[in-house]
Length: 163
Image 1 (cartoon, helix red, strand yellow):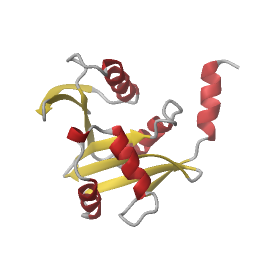
Image 2 (cartoon, helix red, strand yellow):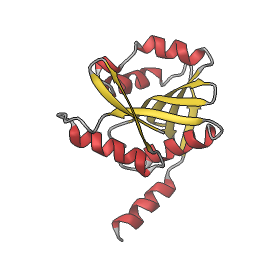
Image 3 (cartoon, one colour):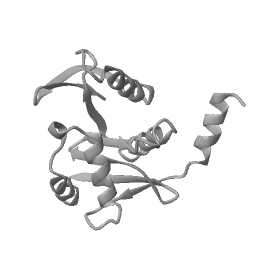
Image 4 (cartoon, helix red, strand yellow):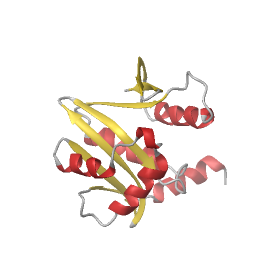
């Protein structure tokens, strides 16, 4: 069986569930662990603030599972007709299996009446994790996001905006 066909068969067996979580959800410690391991300290807000924001009604903490296995999470902030994907992470042992694409598709469908934006670390400046940055950018571009000419500088890092 060729690799593409095998990947499609595996992807069709996935049953990604999405949970809108609050501070009492049993997976919160697992989310915190993935959050801490996926984002550098300078990019993280305190986790308890992230939880408080999600309970405010102005943001969503989405958990993704497959047959009770924690897959990943997204933290989204809503403002008027915008949804900003502030954090998005898939468990590193499950990356490359189609979960990230399915999670993004859920987000795109759920917030289809809004403009969805996110920032990624710039691929225009050389960095020690350059290959990872390029792969991340290609992942989003392959899932329908488009480059903008907008970038921001925050805490010594340049970020490119995708929409």
